[in-house]
Structures are given as C-alpha cells and as structure tokens.
Image (cartoon, rainbow, N blue to C red; front, top):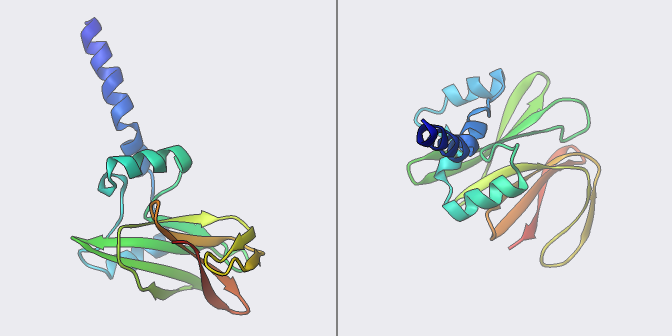
Length: 165
C-alpha cells in the first residue's frame, strides 16, 4: 500500500505541468476562429523540449504557451495571440478584437515559438537599443532562449520590435 501511495504522488507530480496546460481554454470567438483552421492546433507543453518545458514552468507556470490574451489598445477589448501547429508547420496569428469581431493578423515565422503577454512598461529594441514606452499590454512571440519579437498597438496599428536575437 505504501508503494502504491508513493507511486501516486510521483505520478501526480509528473503530470501537474500537463494538467496545468490543459486548463488553457480559448474564448468562444477564438474557438470559432480555430474551427475555420482544419488540422491546426494551439501549441501545447508536450511539444516543448524538456529543457524548454522546465524554463516555461519556472517563469510562466500559469500561462498557456500557444495562447495569450491582452488589451492592446487600453479600450477593454481583449485580443488574442496564437501559436498554431500542424505537423512541423507553425503559424503565428494575432486576432484583434475590433467592433465585436476578430480581425486576423498573420505573423511570418519559422521555428518553434511560444507566446505570452507583456505588461505595459519600457522595452528596448535589440540592435539599436531604442527605448519604447508601451502604454498598454502587448504580445511577445519567442523562440525559447533565442529570438523574441514584441507586438504592440500604437497610433491605430499593430507594430513590432525585435527585443532579443
């Protein structure tokens, strides 16, 4: 009996990150969008290397690595960022909430990306070190420990800066 209890505790500890990932649910509008994308699915924790999974769990334990939401313009409407996969193909999508509908903004990408929300604040462009004071939330598409690009809303349009490479 004691060995059974130990095995259950170990199994629970090993599956907790996967269980946390399973709680990542898209909004009804994002789900409707996904229904128009046959064979594509939101990137999940089990698709990361073990090193990347460890990093993600350490720094973003409550975040979905293939789905993020943010109020890009400060108007109270949540936009969504998606990392979609189909086999070895990856698509990065930002779905802007505009007048009650989602507007699709595809992002060109190659690699195994994750996405997360960045809070308002100061950020710097990687090469020039130009300072950006972002007034609202933004999205960061990142290849773990390699490249990251931050997408933000300014002057009525979506803009981006390279923040690591």
